[in-house]
Image (cartoon, rainbow, N blue to C red; front, side):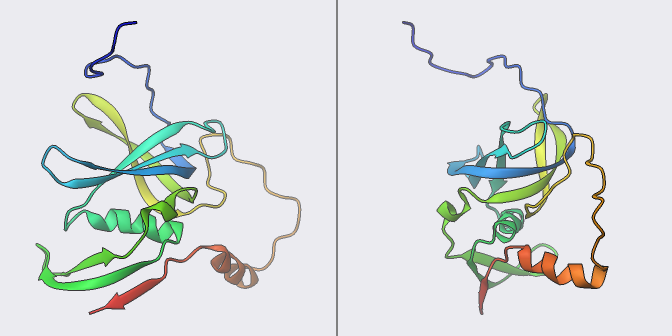
Length: 176
């Protein structure tokens, strides 16, 4: 049987998910390096529920001073604990540079996170963007919305504390 040496330039039938909000389950986290030698994390995940249930996607997060905050938002959404440390440096806007340390990437595996999925063009191909990560729980999907429940709803004041309690919270230990 012939060996396949490269996938570069291979044609695929990839069609992006429609722009919408989806719940994802994180299957694995892999570290790699960009062409600019920056560390990046790849979140391999799949859609959990709805018309596209099981559809696999990969989100890429580059670890730079101005880019790590987006991965930190995923840690928050998944409820993964980390230390937030001021480095004494400032970013290009003059804000303090924070370092997020002492977290276990394996804790992300199996976690549910909701993302707003969008699109961008990169090197002539449409790619997903994964925006506004938050704790998963009943994300609207590209399917038709479910009809409202016939059960009476609790007053807003009573419902808010229950909803807040159900959201996982990342525990940050702040060190100066």
